[in-house]
Amino acid sequence: MPRATKKKETKAPEPAMYMEIFAALRMLEKERGIPVDYMVDKIKQALVNAYRKDREDHRQVPAENVIVDLTDHSMSVRQQYTVVEELEDTAMEMTLDQARNFDSAAQIGGTVYVPVDIARFGRIAAQTAKQVIIQGIREAERGAVYESYSSKTQELLTGTVLRINPQNHDMMIRIGTENGEHSDALLRASEQIPGEEYAEGDHIRVYVVDVHKASRGPMVAVSRTHPNVVRRLFELEVPEIASGLVEIRNIAREPGSRSKMAVRAMEENIDPVGACVGPRGGRVSAIVNELHGEKMDIVVWSEDLCQYVAAALAPAEVLSVTLVPGQKACQVVVPDEQLSLAIGKEGQNARLAARLTSCKIDIRPASQAVAQEQAEEELEEIAEELVEEFPEESAQA
Image 1 (cartoon, one colour):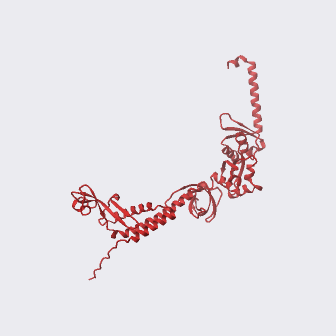
Image 2 (tube, helix red, strand yellow):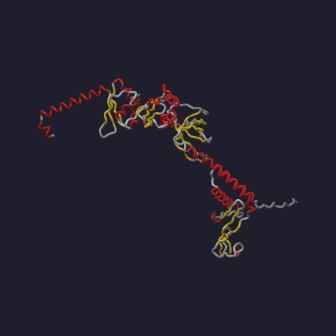
């Protein structure tokens, strides 16, 4: 016969274990900023759930019926029972005789609190506390990274291409901050500049559009096509913009092809366009290179819409701009030989100028404008002659 073995008794956890738990919680609060009380509540909740699942009768009791007291020297777990005359649910109820073993003042309809065997429950408590602390550290790290990247919204960051989806060409990018933290960012194909090609491991500058929480940490949505990519690049390259001496008023952009930017000087002795172009065009060239050849038109913003529209149609020369009464629209006259330049390839120059100024622009060559003006004058003359010849009919009309 096999010799019977004596079952090893479970010892009650020593106070030193609780001191170690609280020491770890205080260190977590100091290093990660998570309050001790918050973590203690988390541990209590986890212990309640562990007890409910670990009951010998496998009965699930309500969480509010389990009370955990945890300090740096001790722990106690108690379950609440209702005192009844006739016992129906042994997991939740207790007779008066049974109740008075725990509380001599117990009465029918009242409640008593029965201690749970800590010796049996101590191992679960230690494991649960460890798991909650580890989870707390992970949550704190994700929270800190989320806060860090939330503050980076609408900024340019440099990242490394991790992988490119061969089906939809979305790119996953690893970006970091000056604090050494890093996260993954998604650059969708729709947010990539047409014609740009990257490979895994390449460095890339992206604009942070949005940050939202995800199960594995913050997910950062980035863009290369957003108009603010141009804005941030100029802020980095042009000291006058960074210092506020030159203001970027508006940007109209067709990524990878052409951008128009309106600027104004905050002081009279500053040339805003010259500041953006830089000595020998060095500043704007650096931005064009960063955007892989995207052309840049920099114009002076003006409160006078006619002047603003004329400047926005650069590099074309504008002879006149006439506002359409009651509408945010205008008619522009340009030299015949510059009509195609003013309109641009496939209408791009006129389209960007209209977006930059928020004004509908009708461009006409000078010859057509002169012919129309002559025709209008002839009509006015005919009308005057008719009035003189038939004054009575004109008066009745």
